[in-house]
Amino acid sequence: MLTAEQMMASHRANIETLYGLTQKAFEGVEKLMELNMQAARAALSDSASNAQAVLSAKDAQELLTLQASLMQPIAEKAAAYSRQMIDIASGTSREFAKAAEAQGAEAQQKFMAVVDNVAKNAPAGSETAVAVMKNAVSAASTAMENVQKAVKQATEIAESNFHAMSQNVTSATKASPRKR
Image 1 (spheres, rainbow, N blue to C red):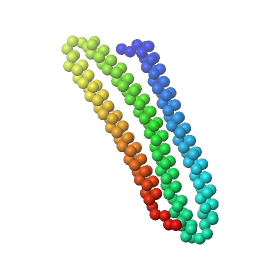
Image 2 (cartoon, rainbow, N blue to C red):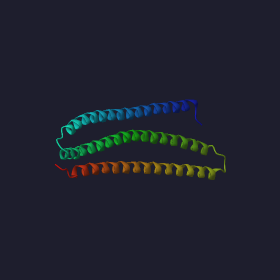
Image 3 (tube, rainbow, N blue to C red):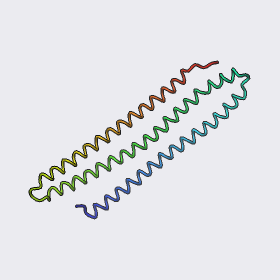
Image 4 (cartoon, rainbow, N blue to C red):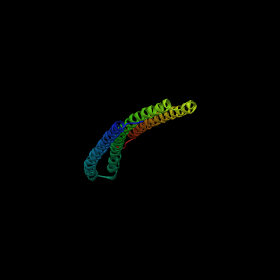
């Protein structure tokens, strides 16, 4: 059984983990806000220069050519913004996943210690029930590890696909014919 000191140490560790995760969440939000401010400043600056360029167009053909030439940088900046946003979100998510894995492993160790303690103090003749309980805990543990691995792989594949897609969009925008 858990002693009062063990319970207090567990609560302290949980509170420290909570504060650590809260700090990581704030850092992620702060990075997103900074990214948004940079994007807003760049958009405002680009809008001003684009408006000046549009207003200086001499005829419809020049205006169409100018409009076509402005699309590539906009697409590239949108793709870069999306990549940075995904990187920030992924980094924050990885921090949370690491903490969850560590907490899960620690909780599993403590639970197994309780199971072992119960097994040692089980009455004679209950060996089969204890073995079944240990096997169930072990199977659940293995299933949880497999789910964590699958989620991690799915996340990595989704990130990779997103990066490839944004790279394709940027490449396609660069390759699109421009009328001059």
